[in-house]
Image (cartoon, rainbow, N blue to C red):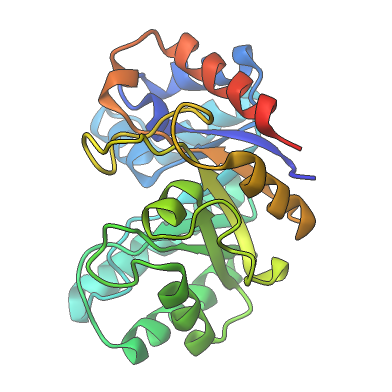
Length: 265
């Protein structure tokens, strides 16, 4: 069984973090997932990373994962060194929050498989120094590593014990792997799971995500296969959508939680 259901802060992007935490707890979510942007916004408002950590701790909600700034996979030179320094800082914050996981999407750019694997090994080493694992997410809209097979190929080439897959139901469906489309993935390779539904007709790809049951993803099959594989991590609801951001955030959070519970095994 999954550890619990986490509310990703991007889902309520127009809502201040303090309110997101309050709403997540009040509506019954088990945890939250934080982004690097949450810390950047706090810094721009004059708050230190330590103050953000204190705020999250005071909410009483566990942190399922902390996102890092993407781009390190394909970057080189000074920019990659900067991104790995930011990566290390995100690891430090994740550890301070009691999370055992950082996550990273692919980011922009292109490169060779060899460079991607080398970058993954460096990232895995940094995560390991903080006692963490890295969940690596392919993006169906990325220029490169936009499928499950390509993500697995990069991880296999890196061959690092701290690096594993992040499966996102949205990107799996968009890339032609709906429902049980990850049946060939060993359970131990799945480090983390995000989910949201895909509308029948794309309106604004990437920012058109919906609660489970409002789109075309076969969630009973998706969640059922995760259970069969023995997945015990969090399920994180990541559903950026301007239409949701314009609504009352408590209603958005409650609707998604109830929809998820209705489809779980």
